[in-house]
Length: 116
Length: 113
Image 1 (tube, rainbow over the protein chains, first blue to last red):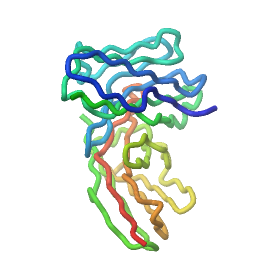
Image 2: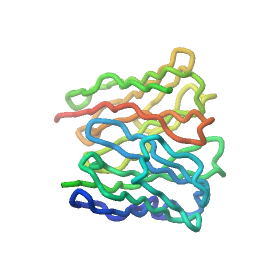
Image 3: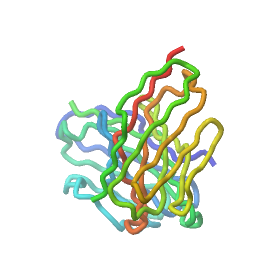
């Protein structure tokens, strides 16, 4: 098990372009989370999946953002018509519900998005 | 809304010192609390998780405590080393919100030789 992986690690895009990020959770972890972190701040929750179902979305997730987890394994986060304010680190985390007494979340290395 | 505050925001100490990082929160109804380490430009590494029924957890030179009644957690680092330099984040899981974490802004620690 190699842990949570994210791709790409860095993305530079021009304002108005669409970008898509991928997250591969720890295998057999049925819960997957997306967070966004800006400089000097702690991560903020964006959305959450249990298996393939998206169960919660933050108000931070505007209509330009969409996330999917089609087969309950990897997940994608798409941002349409990017804005400079979207520049941030996008973090993915996973957790197993078999570990219900602890509930530890494991994070990936993040995708750093820069919108110019 | 769960508010998580970490004090101090930054800390600079010489190698070998024992130090304490503080985390306070407004809602005592928590499921667990996690301490993370984040190196510049990197993701989060889990250090310790304390369940709501526990008072403390230890891992090597790290000890984390939890006092729900006062809304506080501390992370104690013994015999600090330059390699401990990083940002330390605490995060709460309220349980009722399906596991989403509420983070503080972190404490940026620098340990100089």
